[in-house]
Length: 219
Image (cartoon, rainbow, N blue to C red; front, side, top):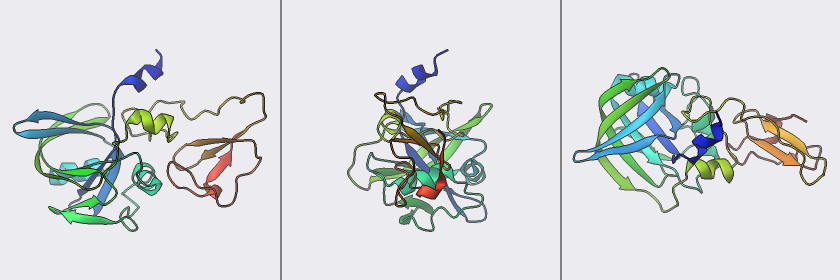
């Protein structure tokens, strides 16, 4: 099978947030949020069993969905996509508002507050279907698609994402006959290609915002 076929399916990039039973704010990046009915208005969200956000949603039956734009800050992707809510306060440096008891970040296009009504289990993910309690616009931007994230942002799917493909973190080939060096971000897996043998000290990952010392040279 050719895994690149999956890249032609349409996905977005979303932030899912929740509150666990102890009142801790949690969140993760997801690429599956779908409107399934209009009356009542219901959304379906897919979360990996290993994400602590999935645990929190199961506990409280409530979540918030935010649509992320093409110009979303790299700190949002890095914080919510490649760190765990189990041992990280993801909202410590991220501006947000409390809406209906849930954290909604400022750097998003819009949000939906969802009350979960049904859950469906797969081997790796839980599909939550819930009714929209409230929704509104936050700022103007172009919704980021999974394709844009891959091709323009050069991002890789976190291992808990439905679209993760094993082996996508391999290095790249030579470019135009030049000797190229490749540096891999230890946080998100982004691979940076350059003719330089070392990264500048002020270099940061364009996907997750990690500094230069979080990159390893892979060839």
